[in-house]
Amino acid sequence: MEKKEPKITRKEPYKVHLEENKKYFWCSCGESQNSPFCDGSHAGTKFLPLLYTPPKSEDYYLCGCKITLTQTLCDGTHSKL
Image (cartoon, rainbow, N blue to C red; front, side, top):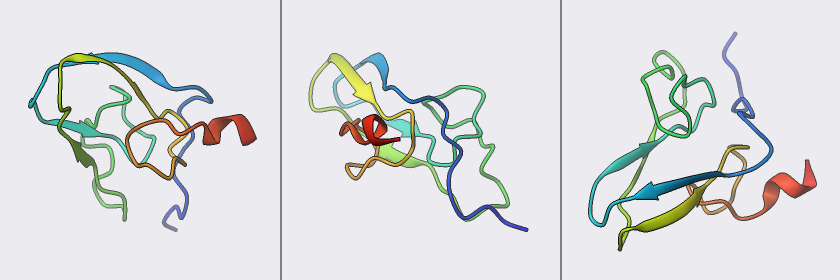
């Protein structure tokens, strides 16, 4: 039976430093051992990693609850869990 909802990795964002124009793949399934980044754990599920390419090098807050409406970036949804 396939999961319909992603696994909540944590109820707070991941603060990560990302480099301008580098491609990052955000885990949307919540099963990655390398969260918030994809490690291929979604294989065989309906979940796919999402590409994020930051516009500049700086710290970003990537979603840990996997329920954000702004896919990849934290939008505060975790505060309602």
